[in-house]
Amino acid sequence: MITHTMIVSFDRPLPDAELDQYLTDIETAMHDTGLAQSVATRRHVPIPGEEAIPALIATAIVQVAVADTETLAKAFAAPGLHEVIGRWQSRHSYKVAWANHEPLP
Image 1 (spheres, rainbow, N blue to C red):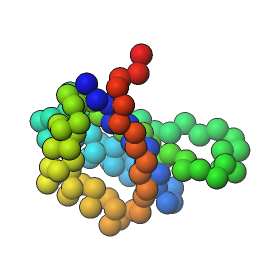
Image 2 (cartoon, rainbow, N blue to C red; image 1 turned 60 degrees about the vertical axis):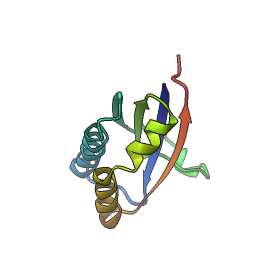
Image 3 (cartoon, rainbow, N blue to C red; image 1 turned 180 degrees about the vertical axis):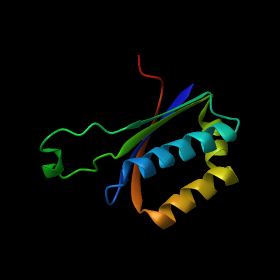
Image 4 (cartoon, rainbow, N blue to C red; image 1 turned 90 degrees about the vertical axis):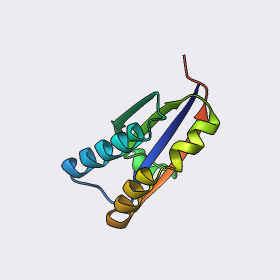
């Protein structure tokens, strides 16, 4: 099994309802590929002073479990996922960092 962990960082703060919708849309699109064994999304929990750190600070985390790297590549090639990503990128610019890894204990 491979876990794909995405750190999503919107350039500007989103209203709570919009961030909730983004997380729902991404989770639904990943499930709709039929390739994800599990999908979890969460908001970043900020701590005081983190804005002073010169790093990508998350707005949210998306974690997807798939069978293997080939399956992950197929999931990210799904047209529905590209539509969701494109729609959100056109409305709210964001950056993504990610790591593909074996499940953490």
